[in-house]
Length: 89
Image 1 (cartoon, rainbow, N blue to C red):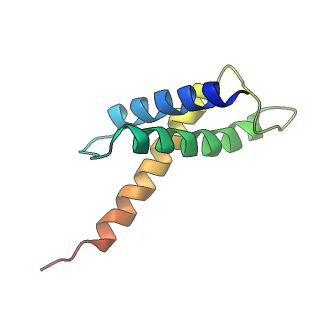
Image 2 (image 1 turned 30 degrees about the vertical axis):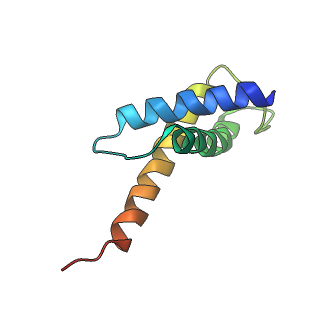
């Protein structure tokens, strides 16, 4: 997969994941793209369990769906990590 396609799929996955997750995620376009790229890695890993050849970096028709699911998991983990760092008074 080319780098441009990887970035575009990452941006789309990050935008869709942020739209589907409840709450306010205050992040810019670059952070959203990085979220989607991390979600693509997580989603590719999850998708490789359902694919017979088991390759993570290949482009599959269900890749965007698993990328969105992976981005939502990453966003959930980031939101939990952000909560623990806040000072409670």
